[in-house]
Image 1 (tube, rainbow, N blue to C red):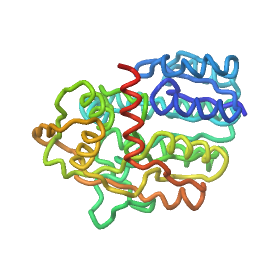
Image 2: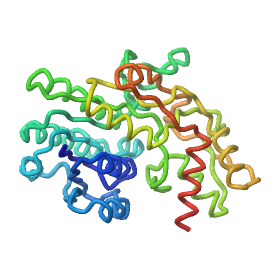
Image 3: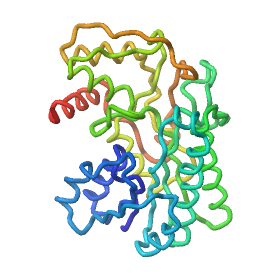
Image 4: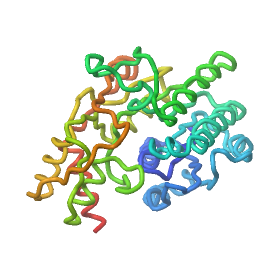
Length: 314
């Protein structure tokens, strides 16, 4: 099968590319390299040759429909994004240009190219707003009331996908991701806390916990996320929560990772960040039932893999 992966040089995107190639598919990556890195595709380019194509292009570019038509994908995986919630708050117009207009350009280009399905990376941590504690873990029936421009953009993309399904018969799956972590995640910029802690622990630098550290997140390993994307390409439609349903506090995460890294020092606490969710977790029951998917990697094993990856790069 011929597929397109936008954002395919990024952390999650490149891991998805590896899996798709290993499964025997032909993959065209579209990435503007604003946050992606060609080094993430090095093993894929070496191991799979002509089965992998790379196109340096922004998803907002007017040339995208023509490129997509030339590739003629059966499935388009859309992962390219402005992925920093803080940037979306500071620069909402820029966020909308990339995540709304860019996303719409991808969807329309996929339709015009005759694609069967579009599978997009959404954000389970933002599209539902801040659910009440008794609603956790949140399922897909929870109202979507995002409180950041980033979350609004993700919701709007889902709405466009639904409309394109009704108007044009374009199938879609929207993967509402929890806090994804794993090898290749950059410990800078919009990186997740697992990568940040790993980089600093192995460098001997103090780790900062914002607020009390009692805030919780649902950490899901990148290989499990990629498995969900691949399953969604073949079956299922609509929104799927991709998480574990388990809440882990930042304090618990730090203690476990510090122990694994052989670090005895405590984290440094700083003032809580404005607008940060106090608790977050996603109920993956729909993905389990309809996609046959389940998270298989424990946080202990996954964070150990992240530490090993950082050690291999030092």
